[in-house]
Length: 501
Ligand SMILES: Cc1cc2nc3c(=O)[nH]c(=O)nc-3n(C[C@H](O)[C@H](O)[C@H](O)COP(=O)(O)OP(=O)(O)OC[C@H]3O[C@@H](n4cnc5c(N)ncnc54)[C@H](O)[C@@H]3O)c2cc1C
Image 1 (cartoon, rainbow, N blue to C red):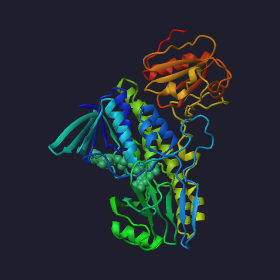
Image 2: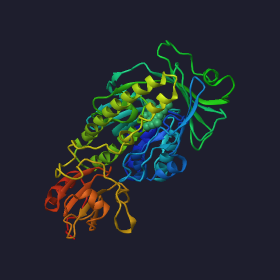
Image 3: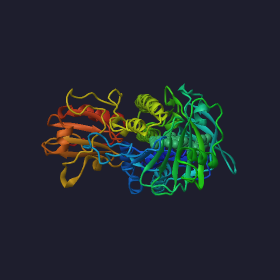
Image 4: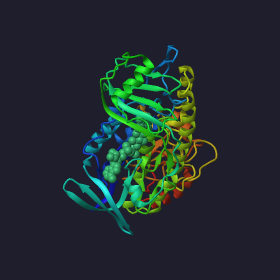
């Protein structure tokens, strides 16, 4: 028996397990592979995902390894070489976040940071455990898990499918991924030894499509990416010799020499998602729920945020909060996934067209449109959620992400107050606060009317701002409306005090 069985220890499953472990929630995290994923896959982490890792205590190793500035060198088919700025751009307005820039980093390094944090919180990944069958009943889910020692039967109150784009669990539940497969394919790989400057991405343009080599920080690996032209039926199997021949063709025979590869793959672009991310006691997250083009680097980042949205809700429901809290996971994350599918598809079309041109200038311009304020993840908001209480028409809207503003005593910033599994109440008043703190609710009075935080959060004085455990504004009300907040907190089993102070 376990309360939560998480299937799949990619970034999504690891984020959820790390959150549940710090909350003391009984869970198991199983992974089919025999050990940690050794392939690079995602190579950039976005500002909002960095904020999530910060809250979970996993950001330091990512900051230590990842880099913000990675300029690009373009080699045109006519022999022109041009150095251009990086393609990952910082958020337009850096106020309100301590992580304004995406970081270049291999996915396995992000996973390692989460695993380290999970272990420190008493959790672990059970490798060599594959979910192979699943049955639901009104009280729980029974999952057959194949291991080297035979098949183990696990009974869980809830199962989270974080088992990637091909999601066996999603198929066992019978939920269809709806969408299209637009026919774009890429050769991918982790290769070594090209003898190029590791301080930049190298991209060769040609009418046959672009070929890129990206150095992965903290390693001697380069991620190889090459578009497979549209007319090719069944492309040759990926192989080091094939990748070398492509480079010889673009850069000149023997100019850039690959010595080894630890991952060789073909990736097929899909634009597909589930209509709902829940089937009774099975919740679907990350690539298992939505797959989309790589433009803008959103897959890992969206999966991390799915898990972060779900963790506190599962913990609350296990403690007696109404089941419909789990419905808000799907309600809130489906529109986010839909927006990511639309945005990445639009950007992918632009890059694909430019990539078939022979000029690095056109491609550089298209690549620089791939990351923007949208892809940072910072503007994601849940204004229409049933968890959001509509607030005054002016000022910071309820449902927004809580900005990380400063101006609090001792140099503290808002996200320092949010760090941890609790809810947070910011009281902008000189008078007593009608709701007291408790095990689940941290209450902070802000008295500096002209400070950055008051100016950002409190359009009017004597206001209360309630922030969810995942950092979104649940409500912004005048102090006179505190009764509504206590009813809200009671509904979701948030322990608090009711003494004014
Ligand atoms: C070349 C490339 C570049 C990318 N670049 C970016 C980028 O820059 N930014 C970004 O955000 N995203 C990027 N992505 C996408 C990113 O890699 C995925 O979105 C991310 O891995 C999804 O995480 P996940 O945890 O949901 O799924 P996965 O990482 O796929 O993890 C699922 C896990 O479940 C396990 N599993 C499957 N079935 C079972 C089972 N039955 N039982 C137990 N375990 C099971 C699998 O072995 C796997 O470890 C890129 C992908 C590729 C291929």
